[in-house]
Image (cartoon, helix red, strand yellow):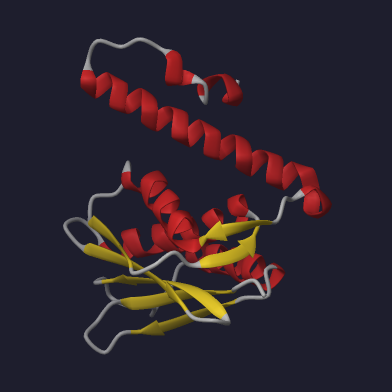
Length: 177
């Protein structure tokens, strides 16, 4: 069923808004199919590829944008190559982004920045919410999942409150080579 939804590209639609919604459903269905394959396929079946961390960030933003009530921006200065399992890294970014969107609340702002150097790429997500104090169990579980995914990739998660308010979450992923 999920795979059939992901093939909506050929469906004719006269209304531009309906076409946009069908395209969004198709992207989400393709993402869910990748995620299910990744989870059910087990660790050995996960494909590790050369990825662009900026593309991972944009994919997470596209998936999160439909339900967000705040503004989300993505800033990238360059292509940031990393080696990893795309569904896992998008899932980690999406967990962090979802937490930031909830913290920012209605009319808040979430910013995603991607950059890197010779040893690692990083995706930094900041929000203008209340900061990290008093995280709910749901947020803590999401952060545990992110930490596990990044550890599997040889990376790490950095979390801290910002002096001006809000929080910063940074995914560090080693670059190839």
